[in-house]
Length: 377
Ligand SMILES: Cc1ncc(COP(=O)(O)O)c(C=O)c1O
Image 1: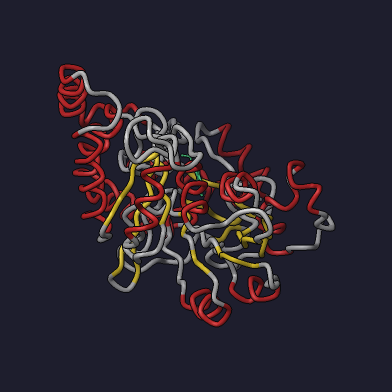
Image 2 (image 1 turned 30 degrees about the horizontal axis):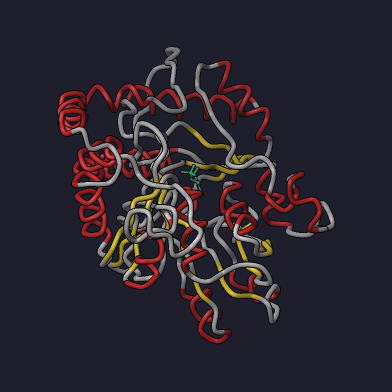
């Protein structure tokens, strides 16, 4: 694309207000309807959103819960994962992927990631299998749908479950199957900054498995299939009716927002690159929702500072690989060198601003600033 003149254009990392501006009336109408109904927990808004989401991803069921973290924990519990079990997760993910494993009493085992997709690497998973391994958790990281072929082969050969962390993956798909439409337990987050974000916390599990779905419905509500009838120890992790009503409104816009992200993402991929910086691999149409646009840069921190001075905010997802976080020190990963790709990535990755409402001027500003940096570096 042609690159804008070097005027200083501020590009916030995320601009939730710009999105709200475009749907204000629809959202306010939906919130008002819930307020007037007086039904704030469960009820028709939650059921409607669950149906909308299941239909959107192509699953038989969707269950709304309190957050993406809760979705993972409840999915693990419904799958019967607990003490004595090992669950393999990628070392490059948000902390909650691992935290949920620990919180159900299982042992988290970290595997390395693929250097091009940044996704869980099947060969590394294979090297970490033990007789205690029960499940593998691929993460549709940054919004790119994971190519599950290698992991599926491993799971089948070793009788393991695959539980998908799709907290960043809504609206992406691969080979005609949407993320969440595989039939397996798939976990979503509606944290405000996600592509489908609530105005507070929220999450969901989609699946084609009626028993697992029934269990999650029961566990999210104090283990009670009927009021005051507790058949298991569950928790309180329900999706609020107000959030559900907002999410149904936003779901109607999701494809359009994701399409714009895709346009911005592919424009950036075509414009960036060269010595010192590597943009993401060009995705197939629909494979990537560009929740995050993550480049690899040799001198990442210097680039981050340079962009900051030019008014362009950036992030790092994530600065410390999970096996090296203090919280998992007790697992005994031997520091630097144990999962080399995830460790190398953590020092090189940089997330550029990415949202549907980015203007051409802002994208031009990002490209111009990066080229300027590369020319002087
Ligand atoms: C990959 C991943 N897993 C899990 C979560 C947890 O979701 P939540 O923040 O809704 O609990 C998130 C979101 O932050 C995420 O990005």
